[in-house]
Image 1: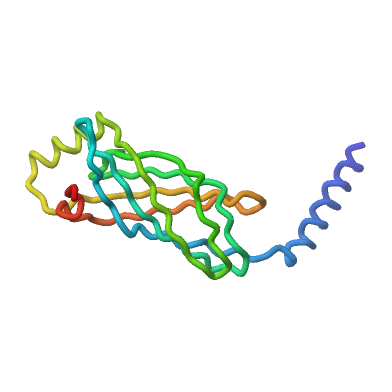
Image 2: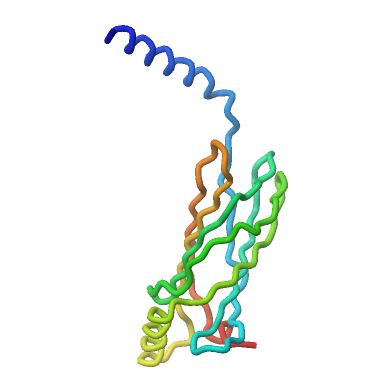
Length: 156
């Protein structure tokens, strides 16, 4: 019985290894943060909208099933959310996604406290996004870090 299991496992491994050359090579899509806006709000905490630009370096269309994201400003987790209203990104194509979110009140108050104590013109940001393309392709994790001008975050 043990020999039979070993032979089956070895056979399965050989079949999977033999099929590997036929699987398509999938290159990771590019994700860029292209815009951040503060929207008017009725409450204490403003609403945000941010734009992502997604590029597909593959020969097959990228049909996104969903996207989850987290945005930190000055190390404070300000925005988190999900979206399933995503465009089809064609083969060797690109597309834009606009996400809206309301920030976490406690984290936002902590951020305002930091900014009030320290006079600054810029804030550090960190964006984590997970793109779910479904199928056999694993979820794609993207992280972007940088600085945003406080003038760019002012409501318009």
